[in-house]
Amino acid sequence: MTSLTEIETREKLIDPLLKESGFRLNKEKDREYEVSGMPNEKGIGFADYVLWGDDGLPLAVVEAKKTIKDSRVGKQQAKLYADCLENEFKRRPLIYYTNGYDHWFWDDKNYPPRTVQGFHKK
Image 1 (cartoon, rainbow, N blue to C red):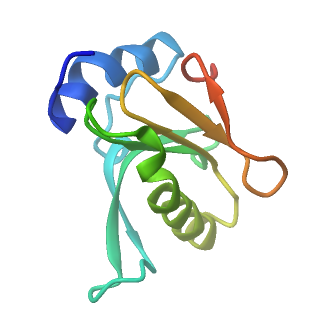
Image 2 (cartoon, rainbow, N blue to C red):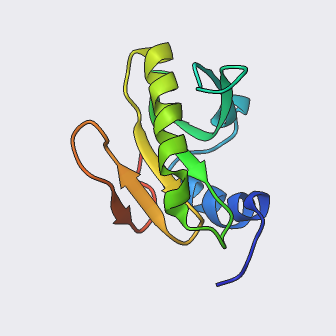
Image 3 (cartoon, one colour):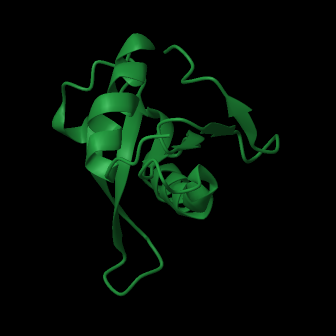
């Protein structure tokens, strides 16, 4: 397994998989989406990716980690972003967390997390 930074992981591994699944990632709000309500000093966080539906509502949030990290390290952070997005849009997004090699999918209101081969199509 090659060790890539988080930025390299996104550019070389995650972006191509998301684009292959139909998410063009051509809008500013697709990456580093600012959310409010995070449990930190400023109450603000930045979701690595938000995957949007045609109705303008979030379908899923993706938390990225660098390749050398266990992707499950991003589970709680991704859940917090999903909480913030749900508060903002009144729709619960699905959750992904990945290191570019290992991908986890979580419909946290209905099912436990499970590994997947990539991202679901829009």
